[in-house]
Image 1 (cartoon, rainbow, N blue to C red):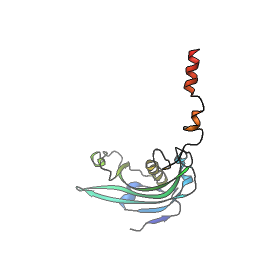
Image 2 (cartoon, one colour):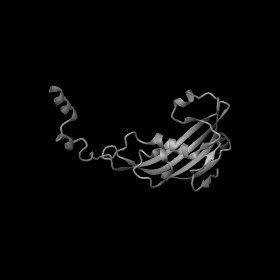
Image 3 (cartoon, rainbow, N blue to C red):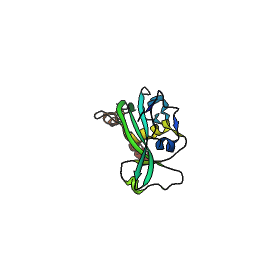
Image 4 (cartoon, helix red, strand yellow):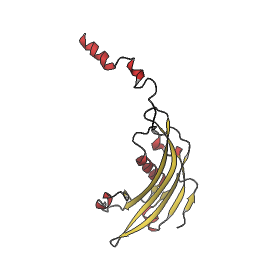
Length: 175
């Protein structure tokens, strides 16, 4: 299958069912600056994600199901939740997404495995939004370095010299 190359996928919009039925393919890059929903977690906006989206047809028990296969790779600089410095995260996504047409039943028993997830089919599916959603699902809950210390003044030794706010309140209660 040949894959259509796009220099910038930010404006790419597909009809998801048609894309999958035709087993179409699109590949390109997304600048991190375009992933605005990541603003709270990114320590740096420099860089790109390499993306490839392939449509596929899957036949099971005489039923044809349509889906998307998304590949994303790139390096993200996140805020370490322990020391607040930047921590590098290798973002690698290989997701199979089953398309559920409007009004169709969600395939609950098929989703019990981790082989794929289901998303609603859309006539105007933004590739940027799809990638952004999958990246958000891939991020660690608490990004941090393997070994680092909190900045001075936050927890640890710096806090021992200052009285606890609760101790101050307890002192006020006694008066």
